[in-house]
Image 1 (cartoon, helix red, strand yellow):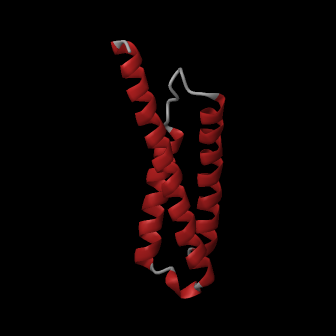
Image 2: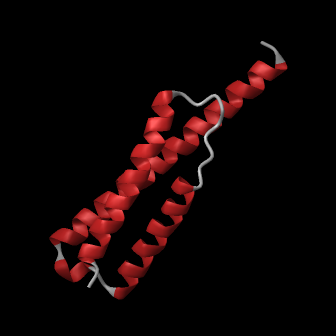
Image 3: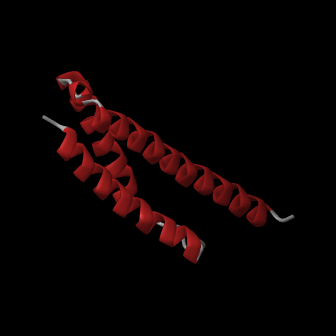
Length: 98
């Protein structure tokens, strides 16, 4: 395998790991908000500030992604889906926030 092929394979692997990490963070954030929706007293000021910080960080990470030239249609769609999900998560958070 040539140096270039190895470098691109490594880059692709890193890219895939990064996107997978963002997806996992969205899942965990959705779970936290689902729990808060079930328990009206769980949205303390501290909890709300922490969740809002996470939402802001994830939004920034997801909306500033510059897709690599070699990204597949599936990867591009995945990013679009994450952008919609973070928007929906923020809306749900605002409904829970006192």
